[in-house]
Amino acid sequence: MELLEQHEEVHDDPLRVRLTDFDKDAILIKVHSFMKTTDFSESLRIAEDLNFRIMEIIHGAGAQFALPGRTIQIENAVSESGHVPPGA
Image (cartoon, rainbow, N blue to C red; front, side, top):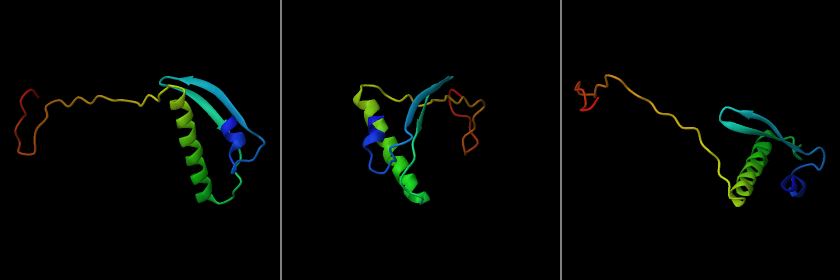
């Protein structure tokens, strides 16, 4: 909340930061504020700045963001030359 209160490009009211839900792979936090611009490109720049600062706060607290991972298994893989690679 302090980040939003001190940011020169964010209106003072309304400001809300709420834990909204637990998802399968995430804890969802809603950050709500109004920016002091009506220009879309400028709003993207401000939002990006806020997001990077939020990441710095999280990292500064010793926490990390978990990124989703996936494993893809390919059956009967064939190389470009038409040969089946060993172990496939």
